[in-house]
Length: 146
Image (tube, rainbow, N blue to C red; front, side, top):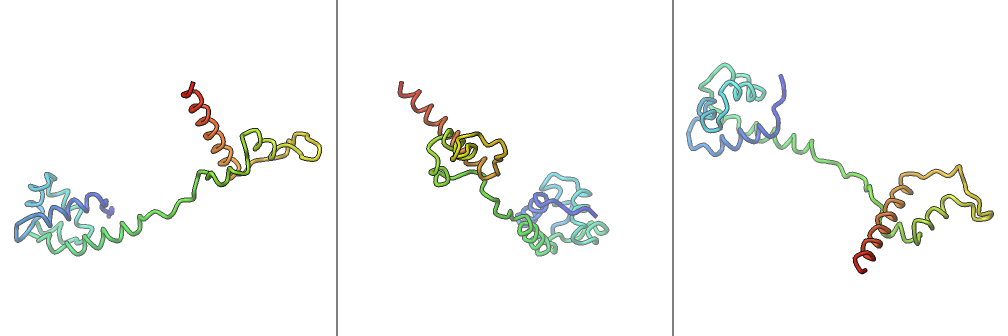
């Protein structure tokens, strides 16, 4: 059996809670929401299979089950803290400009020759990108001043 989506479950829960009827059946819920009763029963059969067999089943009995399901799925969907993908200004303070960055990473300080074996890791690439963005911002501000 396919698990119901969080959005649909929330929609059904809100409609059941909002309904002023003492007993809410799949047919009365379908009139309020505008979804066919068969679709509602197929979805809610995940929580209680008896819903599919008995059309007079009171859907208010499913309220605690629906709320618990929503809580579990929201807790499972909580996103983990993503790693920072941009460099900070503090990390770029060691470099005056893009040229300085390239000089420090690719040039041998003792001889002044270009180091062809040097590679940039992800952190260095982020710093370089930040330096480029800062340089572009400086050029834009100088262009506007003219």
